[in-house]
Image (cartoon, rainbow over all chains, first blue to last red; front, side, top):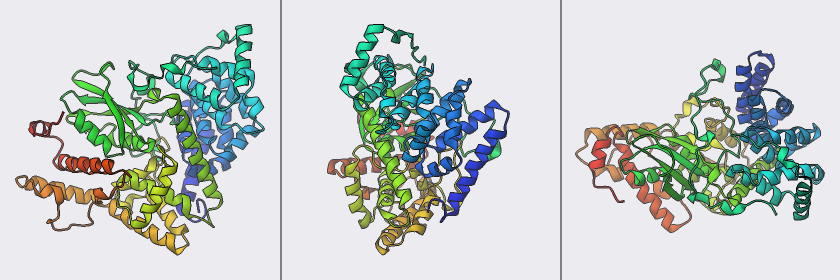
Length: 191
Length: 345
């Protein structure tokens, strides 16, 4: 019904396709940012998720995470945050080495990017991916965020630590952190 | 283990000004096909940015808090509110924090109230997730996740069993838009909502929109940020098309009728307003409208909105009646209004 029955569905698909095409064809960074934000917002609605997957927007978002332009990273990360709620998209992201790419965003200077990354990591949790996502390095990062001045960051990191891993894991990460005092090196997001 | 959760004293901290409170500059360089109905900034919304806490800036400092909260309550139950006196405000304006019971209500209120004029001021409404507690954040994410998963499952078995989750979204529409609920819908509404306290399985930003828009312009036009707040009619049609079983078809039709009723009221409303201005001397006719000749479909009966709680229902109808009076006279006359003996606080 989403796709076939209604012409509304295929209109939407075509529209999204146009967006993806524009993104690929344009040389203007400004246009790219706009289209990227468009796509990321479309990813919020589960109705579009299937089309977006078909158009391989998941990979498009993942590609953005390694861009220099911080807007690209923020919007791409936001899109992944939206998409990764969907189980099938989650699997696509996991298969594309998404955890590593998303984890790198935890050190972004932008709070919005970091928040999207944390939520995405929680969304990516499966029995298989668990060990990678609860890696001590990530937990240390969350521990640090949980002490942040920013309530949003603090809350989200706390939810991560409470829901995604065991207390032993957290305690272990904390010990390691105290042992090496290395977490100081990770910059906190600025805004 | 982790986290100083202790300073999550919620609403009662001294507020800080965060960057996402700012109104971003509207983007003017979009090509035609990506232009939405409203000018919007380039911004990506995620669940992290949404919240049932809203901040309302630009409220004229003329003692209209009650009126503001009444306006908010049109979009759903307000759990808590308070002025943010410490928050930097423009001269002669106040800033308020409003906590809704449900995220969907906050979403509707934000969309409807942002950049709207209110007693001579222009409101700026934004989400303020920094007022959430850890638990708020956790629930918000859980609800969102289960909503998306349900939507995904629905997609899988659309053909066989189209009804259950659809009606779920339907009934949310009901709540959100205060439309008439048919008997059928009522039962479902109750059962569904109770599962998802505080964040019903909502259909995204779109819902409240069919409320005002004329049916004809319902091509799926998404707004600039790619959200489909405006595309509800399409959804309705899809739903219609896919329904097979008689019972669901029936209830759908009922719902659809109600929806159809809701597509037009804008005109009715305007008519009424015009008439109101003409015969401003007869104030009694405003409230009920029973004796008036019927032009077009009636506005949805507000009293039928069921908040599942008697006292809430009473409040709702009270507020609704007051708001009816307030909105039915042109809001460009704040002075007159101030004189009215309606002040209660």
